[in-house]
Amino acid sequence: MEFSVTVASHGRWEVLTVTGEIDMATAPRFRQRLLAVISAGAHNVVIDLSGVDFIDSTGLGVLMGAAKRVRSAGGDIRLVMAGSRLGDLVELTRLDRVLDVFGSVSAATSDSEA
Amino acid sequence: MSASASMDFEIPARPEYLSLVRSLVVEAAETDTNLTQERVEDFKVAVSEAATNAIEAHARACCDESIRIRCKITEDRLEFHIADRGFGFYPNQIQVLPEPDDPSRLNYERGLGIYLMQVLSDDVEIKSGPDGTQVCLSIQLPAVTE
Image 1: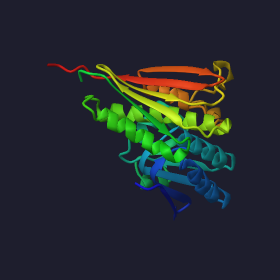
Image 2: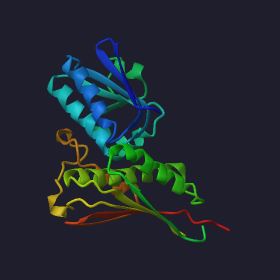
Image 3: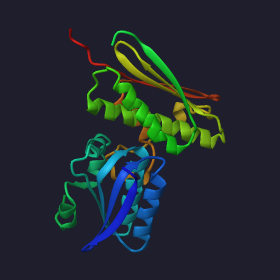
Image 4: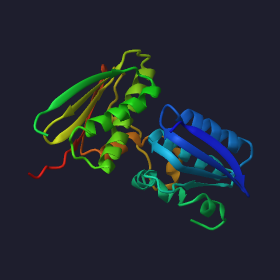
């Protein structure tokens, strides 16, 4: 699947829906879109990775950098991984201890805690 | 699998070739290795991390040579050897990072690559010097019961 990022508003959350592969080739575009959303004032960000086939440490690094930025501005970042193997990688790297992971966009954008 | 096979590839040291490297892992795994899809997916990440490091090493060294990849399938292992011509690195140059679940880990966007290679492969061998780095990643193939 071709790499793409689309952005939509769900209440107070900006939801980035990502498809394709996130690696050294696509991570710069992913980072650029994410930073553009945050720079435009969005500090509550959901990243839907359910359509991502592959992510590596470069992609995980982009997520960590974005989380740091929004949290330092008093916001939050949430990940959605519905039916994706990416969750295994996030657990393996124990990033699920520092990033909240949800099973659907609707769960992530309701204001309940993870 | 009764005989061993070895294939050599060279890829330009550019990020857009990483998906090709991952395809090589999938293709190699499909040659009668009996690996589960989960193992193949894990190994794909490990090999991709090694290739990413090699591409970065060439960029740092301003080296326009290709990255050399050898895929070897033996009776009981699938191996990928990734060799670059970068400046190499030494273990004491690797940044020590906070544990992955430490909140301060968010301050470090890099540093998971070697960790992923180690946990997603059965064996990792890294030889590095001023003329480049060679990484050998391998996974055990499931025993075939007759």
